[in-house]
Image 1: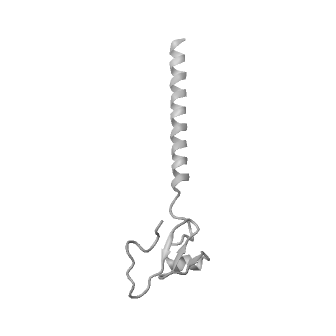
Image 2: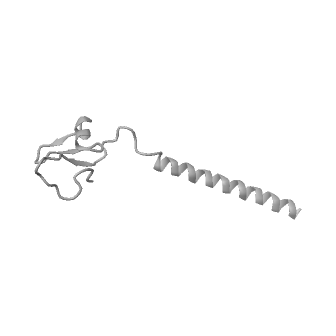
Image 3: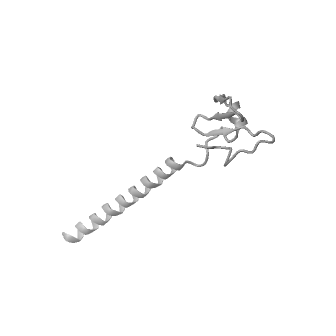
Length: 87
């Protein structure tokens, strides 16, 4: 009787382990996806073309739907830090 119980417990543990591994893999794929979504805004010009609001400052700024701030590149104007994709 004890031998049958051990075999059944092993099967249950293996099945549970496989189910957990599949669940973790599914979560990772869902959380991180397979790359950036199509149509993602990466520049000031793309932000403007997507119809996002433009702040009329100098240089102009555009905030994308996902909250990124893009600053227009202006000839002769040096922006401090990273002018593209500021959160």
